[in-house]
Amino acid sequence: MEIPHRVFSALGDPTRLEVLTTLASGGPATATEIAARMPITRQAVAKHLAALDAAGLVSRSPAGREVRYQFDAAPLEDLGRWAADTADTWDTRLQRLRKSVE
Amino acid sequence: MVALILRAMSNEPNGEVAIEREVELMASPEKIWERITDSSMISEWMGGDVEIEPRPGGRITFSPEGGPGVWGTVEEVVEHERIQWSWRTDEGRPSLIEFELSPAEDGTIVIVRETLLPWRISGPDGFTEWPEASAWSSSALNAA
View 1 (cartoon, rainbow over the protein chains, first blue to last red):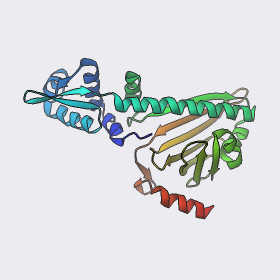
View 2 (view 1 turned 45 degrees about the vertical axis):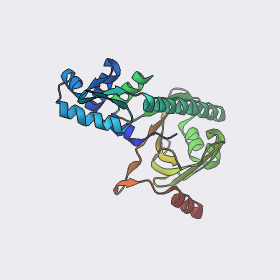
View 3 (view 1 turned 120 degrees about the vertical axis):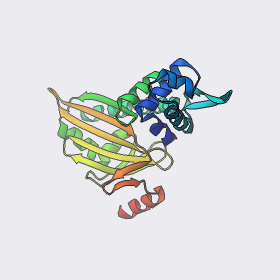
View 4 (view 1 turned 90 degrees about the vertical axis):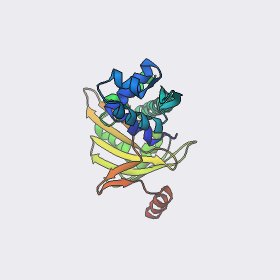
C-alpha cells in the first residue's frame, strides 16, 4: 500500500493537527474563519492549510476572495486500512508462534 | 475511525503510525528468541521464507506467501530481550518491526510493534535515504 509521506509530515505538527481537527469537526472554513477560532494568525493558518492541501487532507473551493477548505478523510482511511491489515497479520503470526512454542 | 487515528497520531511524538500486539506465551524467553532469530524457525510462523542475520546491520529478507518480497536491515539486538529491524517492499513504505520479550510468571510476554517509517530514515551517518531496492537485493544475493 502506498501512503504518501506528506500525510505524515502534515500531521506531525500539533498546531496543524488542530487546524485539521477544527475543519473535521466544524465543517468547511476559510483561513480567516479558522484563525478566529484559534490563537494563531491568519498567515500561520494559511501556511498549515497549504501543507494539509499538499498532503491531500483538505480540498479547496472558492469563497469570494478567499478559499474555503474542507477536510478530506481519504488519506486517513488508507492509514486505517494499513493499521487494520497489519494488526490482523501480526495476530495470525503470533498465533502460529504460540503453536510452535507451547 | 478517523477520530481514532487522529488521536493515535497526536499521541505519537512524531505523528507516527504504529500498531502494537501483546501476547503471553507459555515458553521461556530463550526459546521464543530462537524462534524469532533463527531463519528456518522464523520462516515457520511468519507466513513465508525469512532470512535473518540477528546482529545490528544484518540483512533480513522475507518472501511472504502471495505478496511482494520484503527486505531490510536489523537495527538493534539485545539477546533474549529485544530485536528491531526496518524493512520495506520495492513499492511500499518502510516500517520498523520491534519485538520485546520479558519474563512473566509462567512464560514470556511478547510485544510486537510495527511503525510506519518516513521515506528517509536516520542511519549511523545521519539522515540517509533507502537504497534502491534493486541495488540492495543484488548485494544481498551476492552476500548469501
